[in-house]
Length: 306
Image (cartoon, rainbow, N blue to C red; front, side, top):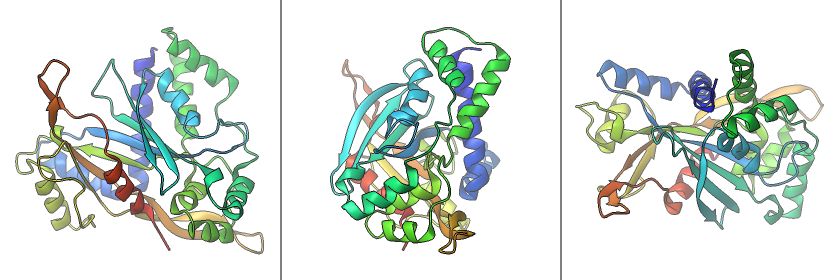
């Protein structure tokens, strides 16, 4: 099994698990396929904390090490000063149809000392969910070696399981207090390494009735999906985005008496992106492949609660 096969299975596993939690994505897929269209995802977004997280690497590297081992290359950086975030996007040169990967990290040290302390206490002592054997197999794949099918299938399962919350359930009071300063941090305490969102690539949707982002959003809204009220980006610009509202779920927390409890909180939304043309390296127009900071800033807010 080569890196392309492992990546294909991993992306399928992440998509399947995400849809099991975000029914809006299932509804979109059903509606597109019923009209003879195709579901292709433009990018997958993840969040991280740039602080000590036990044996797991801090920040973006915790997740990027997986994707760069499977053929992805780090591209542009995006800084969100007000939100105390840094982000990078990754592309797969060997197969541009693979979804881009967008990973952000919260600069925990830039938060107030009290909030930073609550975050660090929750995440400081955790194992790395990737074993030494998993990391060795990733290194082999990165170097161009193939691995056995049995090893490869096991690795895919371990990688998919990595995209979960690696620390114990946070205290309810901690989540609520942290949320006052950073909704991003509160989301992280509840969901950890989980996928933050997938994004439909409207350019490849191939639904005749939905030729653009507006038509798609209007159809989804008419079908009862709760959609973001505004579009990000102007019509005809190099990147235009929208999304569903975030899907809420009951998250595991610890109550003040130390017993397990549930806290209703946002998990993920399903985003939609339409890309415009820009001049290519030789003057030939190509689809814009990057991201725009202001639009991403507004989309970060889709998981805000409280």
